[in-house]
Amino acid sequence: MPLSANLAKQATDIRKSILEMVSASGSSHIGAAYSIVDILTVLYFQILNLDPKKSKMPERDRFLLSKGHGGAALYATLAHRGFFPLEVLKTYAQNNSALAGHIVKDSVPGIETTAGSLGHGLSMGVGMALALKAQKSSVRVFVLVGDGECNEGSIWEAALVAAQFKLDNLVLIVDRNREQSMGKSDDIMNLEPFGEKWKSFNWNCLECSGHNFNELADSFNVKQIVRHHPTVIIANTQKGKGVSYMEKDALAWHYKTPKDALLEQARKELDA
Image (cartoon, rainbow, N blue to C red; front, side):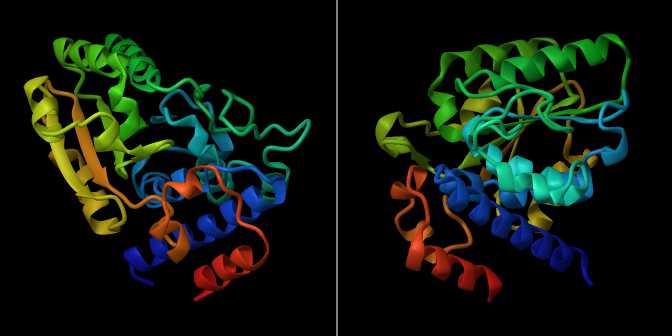
């Protein structure tokens, strides 16, 4: 099976798991989870230096999910990658589960940090990247934020620090789905010219489709990383990607739970 076809199958299986997790728990944020599935699939099945059986090995690459409300996608990806049994996903967002609605550090293997209050992930990633630089480590730090998080001043303070200390071991991915909980991102806080902002902060800036496996893999390629500069990848995505009615009414699916006929329709579309 060609690599892109294999990744596409992995991504579909992850979306199926997320659908069952969210519907069974009566929780939400499925749209925010679906927009990052393809990014996570490329990272965990092709890019990151990881060993599911040695989740704390010192030489592992670090991945931080700053938009913690998309945690269902990270849990599902980790389970499909073999970090913990798929059966555990059935407990998602339920009483006494290790899988909280927003991710919690070390709740299951592979979760590097706690997230929930938005805008903190990049700062934590900068700290990790600085420490690894001091240790002369070849480990890379990857941080995924939502574009809505880029309204936060903490993001831009961290961006200044990363450039100041030439953190070329740091890769930021922006989930550019152009939606926030209450409306279109650019209506709430216009980020444009977005790429130029990052360049003006002395970052190496790349842009790609967040749903094209080849484009994502090319962007993560070490040859694209510029020495002495942190890298940001603006990944253009669709909230609710993979289910037609979620894509069409993306804002509503920030908080809604798929049930009954809509649940069955989503299952059929993902099986197609």
